[in-house]
Image: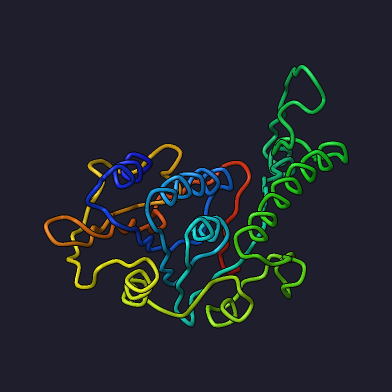
Length: 253
């Protein structure tokens, strides 16, 4: 995915970029890496985001990297924050008659661990790390949206919003689809109307740093392969999340 973004940035025939985002998010580091890549791209070309059903958590981080965010009225967005989860299987191991043995170099090495109860020292260390990432996310929202996160109802609690609510609260810019994004680019970035749409896809399946976030294609708008590039992101069916996570999903009963 990074190679595709870099190729779009270097392509002289590409005049602007539309990111089509439809994802609940993923690892916080992955969102940060994508944010940095999109900001580098935005230094060379206008970049806007169009958001589908979901643009939450790390996906919202990516949207923040663009010059303008378009959503549907019922797009689910927000979920600003970070979570670090781990299972505690100590009771299960005891039931099965399994005892874990270990030798480690220090009391905070490899904690929290699913194989032992989490003590207060380990929990506090983990909370400090989550709070640090949370503050970074809040600062990103403050910088890119020109608002005080604590002034937005529920934002610092990690709540979600509909697209209409997000527009009212200035978390996104306007209700609209790809056509609205094109009209904005034509008017505000002086792009010529009537550009052709050409679809690009990565040669191989996305993996590594960006694999968590995009099962992706790219679109190029323009005549004779010149015009607007749009990177399309979808959540991968084989999504695997490790470490700090910025992701939203509805609770299952």
